[in-house]
Amino acid sequence: MPTVSASNAIPTSRLVDRIPDIPLVNHRGEDVRLVTDLLAGRAVIINSMFTVCRGSCPGTSQTLHDLRPALWPVFGPRLHIISFTLEPEIDTAEELRAYAGAYGADTRAANLPDWQFLTGTPAAIERMRRGLGLYDLDPAVDRDPTRHAAVLLFGNPDKDRWAVLPSSLRQGLLVEAVRRVAGFTFEQRYGIRG
Image (cartoon, rainbow, N blue to C red):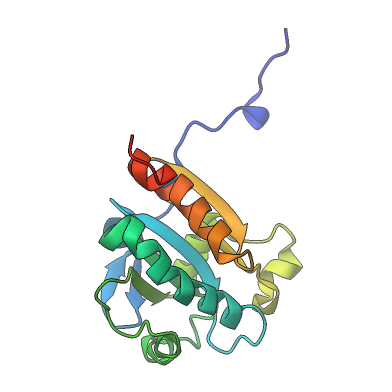
């Protein structure tokens, strides 16, 4: 019978337990804590970005803009969208507020999931990125923010269900995936009454 070593054992901790509850600042200038204020009790969609990105960031931000009204009927206010900067030295709360405004996320909107753009110290952003698993295994690629992946991490921290998909998928596929993974109830997850 084969032995299971620590190197190939199945992890027993939840992802949310590995995410640091770090202090951050959102685009509204509010101090927030990642786990306590943004993840606990919510379904979430998370992506990385930076305001001067001319690559995938504008397309991903447009995708999130389009997903908000499509996901509101499913989740209501229990869904949070979190976009965090990869360049905290440049992307202040004011810079993020201007960027958020281009996508209609500069203020809280009725009947749309809240969307917060986050910055913090470089060390805090690095800890968050690592805790969420949003980094490249190749150190050279990982150091270059222009080469970050255009992906959406989404899930339900309370249920410890998570998935990652390319942000370029069709909206219907993304909505269905977010429902299935992040939903709290059978109806949210499958669109039918249980």
